[in-house]
Amino acid sequence: MKSAISKSMRSLANQNVDGSISETFRKKRMKLFEKFCEKIGRNLKVVDVGGTFYHWKSSAEILESIELTLVNIEKETEELPDKVKFIQADARSLEFMNDKQFDVAYSNSVIEHFSYFEEQVIVGTNIRRIANHYFVQTPNYYFPVEPHFLFPFFQMLPEGMKKTLVKNFSLGWYEKQADENSAAELVKSIRLLKRKEMIELFPDAEIHEEKFFGMNKSFIAYH
Image (cartoon, rainbow, N blue to C red; front, side, top):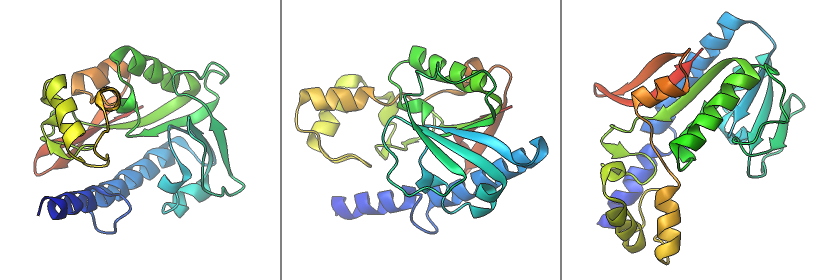
């Protein structure tokens, strides 16, 4: 029974499942991004900080109108078309990129994957520095279901309780952790952001709220 519920939750939250909640939000978000880019201009140089080509494959219309550079600490596994480039790099260490090198910096559900707010500040500063405009999405800390572990209010639990849960159960996208160290590392690897923190990270941005049954599911900072 628990396994069936877990699979159902993953299916609803999986962007790759047609008709899932997550896929529906992704489509709406990409439409919003497309309109955002149209207001800026054509043939834009876009850098996706922390992204993969898989995220863009179903957005052919956008890909045709931009020159895309993917930046990710992990190697890209997809075969890339000519207009798409890949740079293997850490979002915290983009010193090799020039100021305003790109027209738009895009980042989708990445900035919460840094353990400390100080690191998120560095990532946010880099995003604002390397592009004239940006479009940054992240889940809302106060949304009832934590989107990575798919567990109600997981983000608000004491750290010790989080470690106990991930050591004893497979939660969300993660298998049960084998020991204390791996559990601690996993729990520490995600830090969801509050609205006021997004404003602090991106002070010149407007904040768009993605709603689910009237609740703020996630935020998009755009400028």
